[in-house]
Amino acid sequence: MATVRESVRKRTTWQRGAILKAMEGARCHVTAEELHRKLRAAARPIGLATVYRALNGFVREGVVEPVHVGDGKVRYGLSAKHHDHLVCLNCGQWEPLPRCLVEPPSRLPSGFKVTGHQLELYGYCVPCQAVLAGASPG
Image (tube, rainbow, N blue to C red; front, top):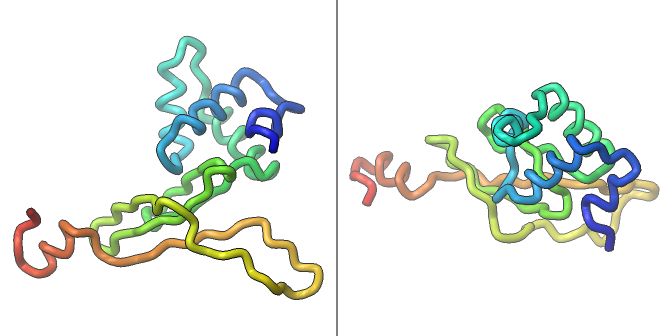
């Protein structure tokens, strides 16, 4: 199986390579602004517009997937590191699940090709459960 970098080698610039490297090192999905802040501190800073253009290209190429986890921001993660999320309805905190919970469908309508999915499980984190119950978290 090709690595992420091998799959986008046809248009690799140093900026795209740096963005992919930063995404490979991320714990979970990141916003374009978070990537930009991290890359801005490097010896060769990258502009925010370049980050957005690269992310959009990676999405079109299927290397990166956009995710909406309930905080109103678009976050991006490597398709090869796909996972789902838990989202707190009270504070908006979210965390990745250790693995994908969706099994590939065994039957699809003729001609339909699945290219991805998103799954967020909504509920209340432990601190918010305590606050909502009238107790202090602890």
